[in-house]
Structure formats: C-alpha cells, structure tokens
Image 1 (spheres, one colour):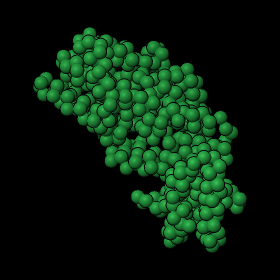
Image 2 (spheres, one colour):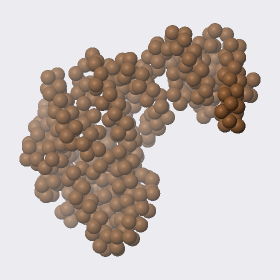
Image 3 (cartoon, helix red, strand yellow):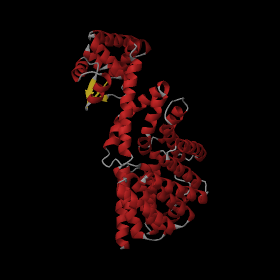
Image 4 (tube, rainbow, N blue to C red):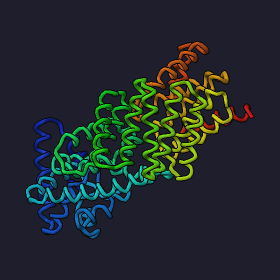
Length: 458
C-alpha cells in the first residue's frame, strides 16, 4: 500500500479515460484512507495538522506549528503519507486534500491555521527587519522565497479571518514583494486587507497605505498612489508620529515630482528632511536628500543634485544602510554623468550595482544599468549600450515596475540615439540579447564596462 501512495501522480496520469480515471481515483482514495486508519489518533491529528502547509516546511517549522515531534514526522514518512526531501517535509497534493478534509472535520482547522499564520507573521517580520537594512548575503530573501507559498496561504487565511494579522503580515512582506518583483501581487493583497475592517493600530495601517501607494507608483498608477499617500499622511499626522509623517511626506512629494510639480515637491521633501532630523531618523534624512536630488535632476540643476546626493551617500554610509545607499549612489552617478564627471559617475554606478546585485534588487539594478548604458553611448559604444538598455528593461519587468515619469523620456532618447547609430534592427537585436541576461550577469557586465570607461577617463 505505501508503494501505491508514493506513486499517486503516475497512477492518475496513466488513466485511459474518464471511467478508468474515476475507478482509479476511488482506489487511491481508499488507499489513502486505509493508511490513515492504520495510524493511532495522535498521528492522525499530526497528519491532518500538516495540511496547513502550502509547499511543505522544514523540521523546525513543522514541529513549532503542529506540535509534532520529528519522530512522528518520520513515522508519517515511513507510512508514505509524508515526503522528506532537501530538508523539507511535504505532501503530495492528493494527500494534502485528504488531510485538509480531516483537519476541517476535526474542528481544529481554525486554530491550526492561526498557528500557521502566527508563525509566518513572525518569520516575515524578522525578515523585514533584515531587508530594510540590506540582506547582503541573500539569506533572508532565499528563506522568504522558500516559504512564499506558506506566506501566501497565511495571508489568504488571515485576510478572511483576522484582518489585523493580515495587515501586519502584508506590511512585513513589503520589501520582499518589492525586491522579488511581486509588486502586483503585493498591491492586490494590500488592496484586499485594507478593505477589511480591523482594529490595527494607526501606524500599521499608515505603513500599509504607504506600501500600497509605492506599488501603485511602481506600476505607473499615479492617481491611486496619490490617494493612498494623502490618506497615509493624514493618519501619520493624527498619530503624532513625526518619523512616519516625514516618510509619508516623502512619498507624496515623489508623486508631485512625477506630476511635474517640482517646486512643491522640493518644498515638501525639505520639510520631511527637517522632520526626520527632529525625530532622530538619520535614514529618513538620507532619503530626503536623495529625493531632493531627484527633483534637482528633473529641474536640470545637476550641480545641486550632486550636492544633495553626496549628503545622502554620506549618511547612508555612516549608518550602514546598503539599500538606501544604492539609490543615493545611482542619483550621484546620474548627476555626475550630466556634469561630465565621468570618473566620479562610473565609480558611483559600479558601487551601486554591486549593492543591488548583492541584495538582488531588480529595480535599482535597472536604473544602474541605464546610467552605464548612457555612459557607453557617450563613449561611442552603442552595441554594449543597447545590450544594457535591454537588460534594464528586463529588470524593470522582473520588478513589476515602470520607469519614473522623469526618467522615461531619457530612456526613450537613449534608445533613439542608439537606433540612429547602429540601426533599429541591430539595436533591437542587441537589446534582446541583454534582456536575456540574469540580474547578476547584467550587473557584472555593466560594472566591467563602467570600470573600463573610468580607466580611460583617468
């Protein structure tokens, strides 16, 4: 009987027709029930509880969530009701459906799913604290990747059963969604949980609104982003949280910049900088400098943009915030590029791309690639520039993002100049080649090319 259970998918696929399939399904259902009935009540309860995992779990997680022992898990493996591979326990989907039915019939389903959601909320929050500072070795991104299906399951259950827990979980997953190119998925989850009644504290709801706005902006929906940012700013002010108010103001100011209201954007960014300074939030101060550099770049005031970006880079280095530092360096690289400070520009882009690659930050990588592509075009290396342009477009797609409105005309102008230089067909062929590169390959190629430019400029 165990051999039959372990080959469920093969047996189902071997069916010759609907009638044969139904007969085999009845046989398999009977086989599962027979093996389940052989278990003692305690092991039956463990088997049923394991149904809460989507995509399996490692031993520590399975034990913590279900209360099982590793010996009990291994007994289920021996009975072919559970699989153990690459350090994770998992079930065939047919077995999981059977276990889910038993879990729900037992009346223990709600509590089991709450235990599961609580565990993965704690995991997501721990991961978020690392990601906000920069996951230099990628350990937490890999861990959250491995548990993505469990995180989805936990969020799906909580959205219906516990809106407060769902909001906490959605907020904790924000950086993971952004860096892994799940902004569309994240936006949908946030829309769903924000639409539910919850007793969540205002600060958490404010963060959820801001994150939803960021995802809307990434996808070019400036109107939705504006509404979310305005609501988040009102909530932050009402909560009396100065640092959070400054953060909300930065988001709203970025929206104003994208709409071309540069004077108000700069004024709001500077106000946010002073609030962050008052709150002792040095990371916020650095972010304000970088955003002010964005506005100066949009104005064509490249010297001021360089000065603002240098301030942001200095603070981000001092506090060790690699994620923000990559953005500061990209703005510095662009400002220096516009000022024809080639050596300084390439140095900034090389470092930014190193940080983006280390953190597997696709959107940041795209902006770095575009900067180096522009440098290459100016050095009359259109083929390599076209490859990086294609790679940048691919990384933006992977991130689920579109270029900021102030950057899109610059990217389109670069594409036109490259097409005029090597011909439209060749430009597209080279761009397609670059688009096929992985993030690491694209970032590595751009760094090598930028270093070569810097050596020639020295």
